[in-house]
Length: 422
Image (cartoon, rainbow, N blue to C red; front, side):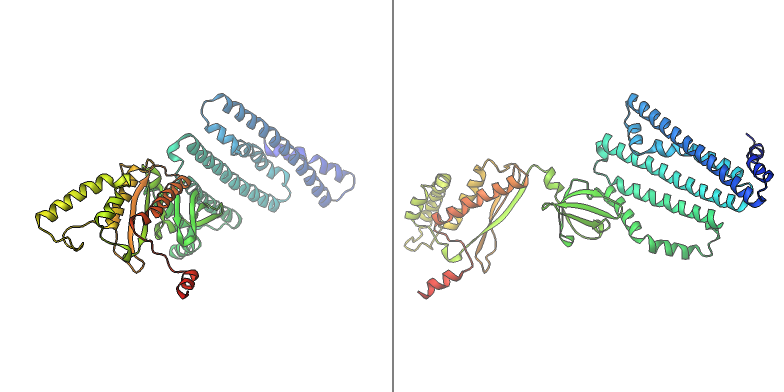
């Protein structure tokens, strides 16, 4: 319909008021107000109708299709935002009609409508991005551990940045191309979006290099984080700690600082046990025949002791060693036999993975004694079960130490000093 004809049609109320004695100013103002109310009412009705129709059509279409992408479009309010386009177009068409007598008001109303269109386009773009993110995360497992939220935030920052420049241009006529110095503008942008840029670069490196995934267990001592990654955003990584608190870590810290990712352990066939027993050095001694006979009663090391005893006797006899002193020739020690016992005990334990590295070793002596380290891997990697397995091993070994004539080192307590006084 021609706008000029519509304008002539809407003039009847002004003419009616002027024919009945009202001044031109007030007649024009009331006529404009009446036409504005009628147009606004029509636009609201059109918005309500189109919104319901489009939403219902989208829902019916999504229920019939096998793809879930359209379902996510409905959930992200995409149909609602699209439905606003038709009423906005009608508003744009009627602005010159409604404000025919007020050109400045028509100009600013058009600017406001244009700003609303820019914002509406950004919201539609955001709905599409959210739909894409949810669809990829729910329908494709390979995207579950990717920082899709970071990419969405980056695209939205660019979208809002473009929208802000367009709005400024609409309101002031200022063009981005008229910037006197692109370098100065770049410096300002870098200063404002420093953390965003760092986070964006870091999120790309994290994703490409597969440094961290969602649901990874990480330990980041600098930030007090020890738990599972629940979210990777553009600026932060969210970690739910084992005490159910949350820690947020700057994304760029994942590539700037050192942290521990337990994913390798979770994907491996076992979880490492590495702990030492501190043996008093003055409790270590050579074993005589009586000591060996007593230790043979321990079933786990009886075959070893019998075999070792024959080798030692054979060697000493071949060399005519004087065994009136135990230090002469080859001998067995209670610490060496205990190491063999610990090794045999670990090999017999069904909770230990025998296919992975297993060792009981003697570390360098310290001022707290001689460390005997147990190094092996448990079959069960779950934290609670892992701790039970580790505790059972060391409970047994600590209780077994006195049977070998050995003592554990322990820092003296107040009671120990009181007994010395007595």
